Image (tube, one colour):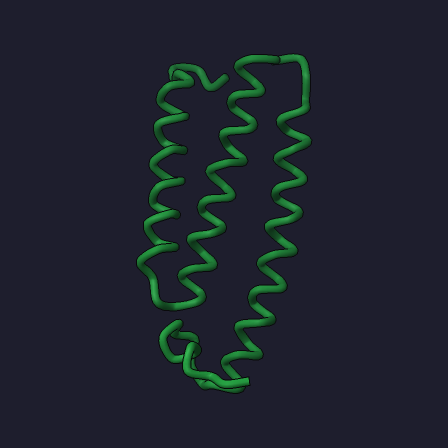
Length: 105
């Protein structure tokens, strides 16, 4: 654990980060901002996995393994989302959510 910092303070910080990500995901109109909000949610959950694992089972690395898996999935999700956003921008010339809804396929 970090000297001088309790688990309550870390969980409070990650809860705040998680809900900032939720708020950003719900309120943003830009696809890039929505993607950043999703990444913030995933990063808050990664820190929670590591801290709770370190607190409950200090000798087991199961929470760290889950965190590495989440980071790998988040990297793949980001690469795919950026590719989709770039392709969408080429077709619509905008990354705003409202302007992409009017597209007819």
